[in-house]
Amino acid sequence: MITEPFMQRAFLAALLLAPLCGLLGVFVTARKMAFFSDTIAHGALAGIALGLWIGFTNLTIPMTIFSFIVAAAVLWLKQNTELLNDTIMALLLSGSVAVGIVVLSVLKGHRREINSYLFGDILAVEPADVWLAAGLFGVGCIIVFSRLNAFALITAHEDLAHVAGIHVRGLNLLFIMLLTVTVAVSIRLLGIILVTSLLVIPAASARNLSRNLRQQLIGSFIIGILGGIGGIVLSYELDAPCGPAIVLVCIACFLASMLLGKVRGSSNAPVFEK
Image (cartoon, rainbow, N blue to C red; front, side, top):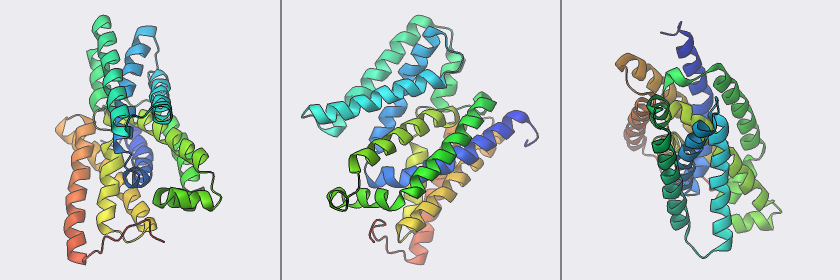
């Protein structure tokens, strides 16, 4: 299995993207941004459809561009309207999916490509995707760990972060940009429908076992790796789509963490307390 080039690329992509999603997921879950990441992921469908229509050979480019457009639209509507956050994201999610479906219905004949983006496909991971994942992993880890205290304070108490002299707006924008690119790139591995699960489930699993932020970051990082690698092995053995297999392994890790947390008598104290 590991000797096959497409499996090697899939394993490398999982080793790079799954732990990065786990790290970002700690802040995504704490800041209640799971619906935001889901909106970005579903917005990528329109980018894929438009990319096929224009004739892009690498659909990651239009997919990422349109994901950025959706993220920017969320921020603009939040600042310039009285709409609630969930209303804004539901509006953009449904609208971008509708655009994607209409364009795809006109194009026809791209069922295989669409299925691989919807559910994830280890065969779709190309060498360029691995290099992109490697660069994103490096940049993401540098951003998170170099500004860890600032991100933690913003997540725990944004007003206090302002008082402490932290450039809250700039760091929030940086985090959203990093999250958007990570979601767009991870779609190759997990698919549009399930990519948010790799942000949420490892972080939730680590929360069951953690008493502080660092423990949750480390736990989410490790569980992300276990879910990614285990899911690819399960996908290969069962000849099943990669995305759902990764999610099932992550859910198994979550259930195990619940049991282990109860055995240990975890206090489940807020991990962002100093």
